[in-house]
Image (cartoon, rainbow, N blue to C red; front, side):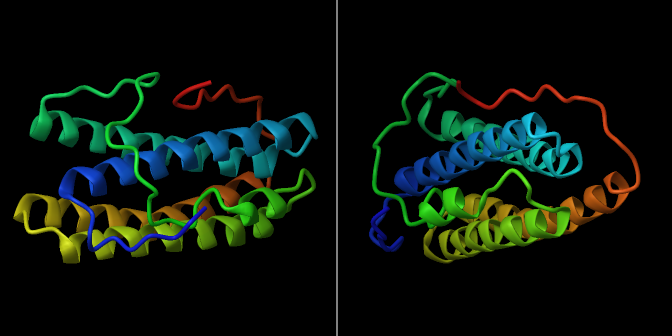
Length: 175
């Protein structure tokens, strides 16, 4: 994915890119979780399913903001407006190459830390460049949530390592 700086983007493009990144993260984590589950690695699968749910929540939060500001509801199958090359590392080749079906919980956490650090940086930068106080607060909140996300995943991993988990059915934003 081509890198692009966030500064020249409009507020709507920043929101759209954030939604694209959250949607991609949700779908990627769900896909990885499903692969891990098929490979009989339920502990690590649960970590990715939990991460997918958090990213879906971020997508829905951004969806509401975009609707409030621009009066356009973006559904799961609706293309996002103003598709731009978004400043994000998410979805680059490292996501695919580092996801393997025998991934341990510790490897999953390291994987998520790398992805979530990029998301946290994106939201911090978005808070810096936007001029709207309401969006500055939103982006700061999302940056903070991305930081807490990894800590929450670590708790899930510790709890999950001690017991076999039932099968989970998590649906990504769009299949």
